[in-house]
Length: 384
Image 1 (cartoon, helix red, strand yellow):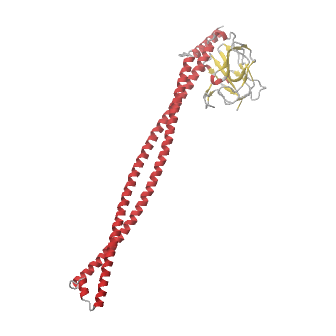
Image 2: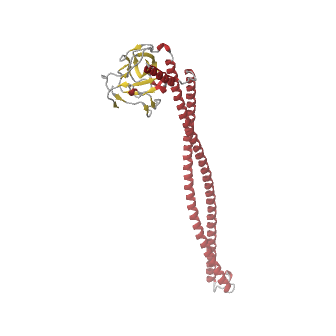
């Protein structure tokens, strides 16, 4: 008798522990909060995509400026080579002018030392008319030649100096353009970096909002579960004893394989839980059986679970079956151990046909889920 009382007492404690979770908001409130978070996430995503488009445009402008800078550098290099070449020509011309001027000076000095001899003296000193004419033309040719050379050199020097000044002016203009382009490029790089930081921030905000959405979905499911649990119309009046049966027939292919165990795991697909509160049996569209006598608490669609059945077996024991393709029972039906209740399938958030099998002790709260392998008679199992 004392043993039975103790058993009942422990069961009540378990029920209390798993049931003490205040539903602060209704399912509709949670749905509204989830929708608000989803809307905010879409706004953040749109803003992020807009920034990414702006960054793409900035990248194009940066490439254009970099190309322009490269062209300006090439132009500067060409101008510098031209200036260097002209400077060499100017140097040669200046040397030539200096040489000619030295010769003229030497001739004048020689004439001076000879007694202030002038071109006129040379003409008057001619012995005859033929020599006079000859000397005249020689002097005239020398003078003209000297003057032509000097004029030519000075003209070339002036022309080259003007060209040099023009080249220097162009070089300065190119340098100024280069500085301006580099400043614009730096401004664009800075704007790009600023926007990239903003994109990273928005990406983090996206993740946080997605986590909120998933949390709201979890709370919605929890609220629906507890609502179903509190519906006394479907409470099982019988008493559970022993262990639960395996929900799949041994005649079913892969009945003794497990594709995902109870506990933490990498999320197999977007929207799937990373804390797996069940085991997955990889059967494909095969009969599913009740693990014990009981009463169907709910049979319908449940968010990521797809088609979903919950059964109350009494004494705080519940089982649940997810991703079903069809039902054989309805909420309120009484079922027997080994009775077919559904056909497995691939509904809800699923990566392929399988049976999602859960066991709860003390209530249908998420924190009441236990490892089904510890509470069922199961065959020798293999991992898939």
